[in-house]
Image (cartoon, rainbow, N blue to C red; front, side, top):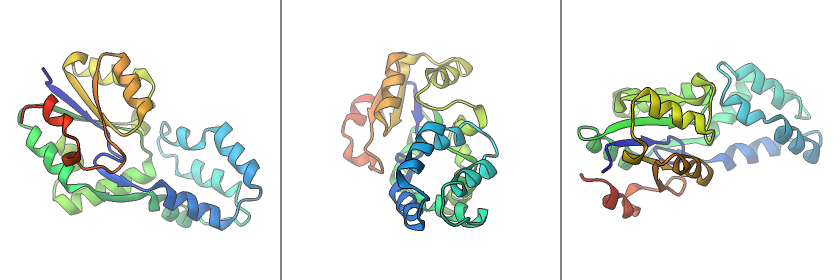
Length: 208
């Protein structure tokens, strides 16, 4: 019997469009496309951002090291935030329906730049804080762990005394779901930016 539900943020509660940022960054021109791709991959720039608090300066410096023309931090931040879409009202309402009967948690790989934008956006749209929807929220850049590291799932389970077999996890990334499943957590696969209404298996796992 499911008693606890862990929500991912990007792609589940919040629309994300990585191609917007990727294409815009590419249009600005890199010194060497192949070398820049290798740089971001080997240095794990985007992954590091998600486990480093206050990573803005680090990220902007890394981007500027690869651009043909140096950009001000404000411009890089603006382009980075193009990735963020709108909150998915249907899924937010679904979570609100679940809240009286289930323990709800949020577990997100994120960074301080995006965090500032979407928390403000959520409050303006729904007139309450994103954190108020959940018993507890876990943001990777605040705790220094990111999915699919099993330690982040163990942290959520242990801190809140959750039984893995009674816990359901919504995420749009297969690697994240697989890591949770290895710990005994049940999962439901979202396609990025899907609506809950297109996932009939939810009604088989949850009593509304």
